[in-house]
Amino acid sequence: MAAKQVTTTPFPDQKPGTSGLRKKVPVFRQPHYVENFVQAILDCIPEREGATLVIGGDGRFFNREVVQIAIKMAAANGLGRVLVGRDGLLSTPAASCVIRKHGAIGGIVLSASHNPGGPEGDFGIKYNGANGGPAPESVTGAIFERTKTISEYRIADAPDLDLGTTGTHEIDGMSVEIIDPVADYAELMRSLFDFEALTKLFASGFRMRFDALSAITGPYAKAILEDTLGAAPGTVVNGEPKPDFGGHHPDPNPVHAHELFDLMHGPDAPDFGAASDGDGDRNMIVAPGLFVTPSDSLAILAAHAHRAPGYAGGLSGVARSMPTSRATDRVAQKLGIEAFETPTGWKFFGNLLDAGRITLCGEESAGTGSNHVREKDGLWAVLLWLNILAATGKPAQDLVRAHWAEFGRDYYTRHDYEEIDSDAAKRLMEGLRAKVASLPDTTIGGMTVSEADDFRYVDPVDGSVTEAQGVRITFAEDARIVYRLSGTGTAGATLRVYIERYESDPARLEQPVAEVLAPVVAVARELADIEGITGRAEPSVVT
Ligand code: VG1
Ligand code: CO
Image (cartoon, rainbow, N blue to C red; front, side):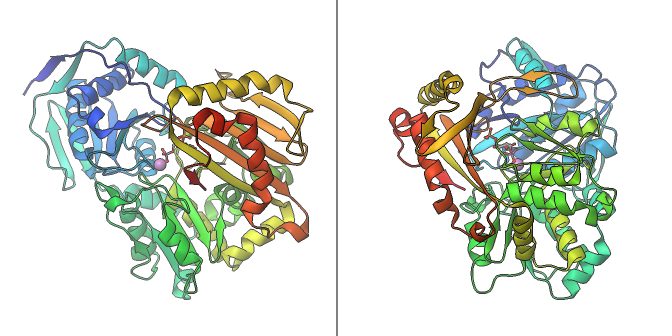
């Protein structure tokens, strides 16, 4: 068999966003579209000759086809070995784990994560480096530059491989190992958590529900929670990965995971509820009768992580993305460790993790992770919660309330205005940017602006600078509003508005979230003239 050189022309729209290249499936299905982008990635790995590459995805529609293409292109581009998840499956955190464990040069991970799948849904391709983490901006920038000039790609002229059974194949001198997608990940979890205590917890009658939303985490959650730790069969629901996620929108929030949310707020709520997203890197945590915001979850995990064996030595530091509430900063202050604020997107945590400056990090969008891999990790967060519950013997809802009593509560909500006109979105952000300098000390809706800026990040490890990461406005009334545009959408623009208010009065820790935040929401709308500019009186999704 020989490699083919195929002549091609560039596509102008292959710029990676917050997390890889995401487009509608029909865009990816255009002739040469996938191949161009994969070749651009491979061209940006100069040391690829003879190296190992990991390939896998979240099982969504078009996953299998692209896995076959990526394998053949790796062979034609001089890679020595590829590790591929059985059936082409690998959750995002498992891919990160496999890259690190097997000394791979990187990985091609196929996913559009929390975006819906299916023939008219979304698809995505991202590249992770040798540390197992999303390629940093310097690399995604280079990949984009390469896509603009590409004139040919290389692909092995070989038949499709059977991905359904583990084993080793060969294509043009490159070895292809089909691996169990769960094994390495499960072993890593066993090394971090007290599996004996977790087994006892479930044996004592502790009940939980894990909703995999018909996405990738099902097989991982079943293997670990049910088969290893003895959780009752049926603990994991929607556990079979489906190409269209069974019609689910695989975004674990109270809106899209409403079945779990409703169960946890009903009379027969189990002791603990959790869900994960399309590619397994996000988590939603619900205690009986109490939704735990991802920002609170990060803070609570930071406060108690030392109870799990993998973190018994304490944390070196913590980081949160800028729009994530400041709850974790309060914990860091108490622990006497550093707290960092990064732009949205996991790629910004990589340097801090590699340098040992942080152990734990997270985002308000339900991503939490640690230095065990270089991606956010949904099931890991659930296991850390379970380990903490087992170690403290406290119900989850008590743990949350105890946290508020000690640190105060950051009331939090996010308003998404989806698929708005791209030009209007740009105008809105430009309007805000033009205003920030004059906002401090002005009063609006009874609140006084104390600080306002457009977030600019200077990486504390390599000094690289990332500009214009979102407008943040802080108020003297302990409230904050953040505005930014999504970098993962595939139609029009999505405006995200993050709204929070801190409350430390012990008598005001159990107020309805919407009520506490209503005045701040009103200010957020007025300041940016959201309705005037976008024509939308209400957000499309409130979480
Ligand atoms: C969103 C989230 C961000 C997350 C990113 C990828 O990005 O806000 O926190 O890192 O998705 O998550 P954006 O640019 O749309 O706000 V995943 O689980 O979809 O890969
Ligand atoms: Co995801």
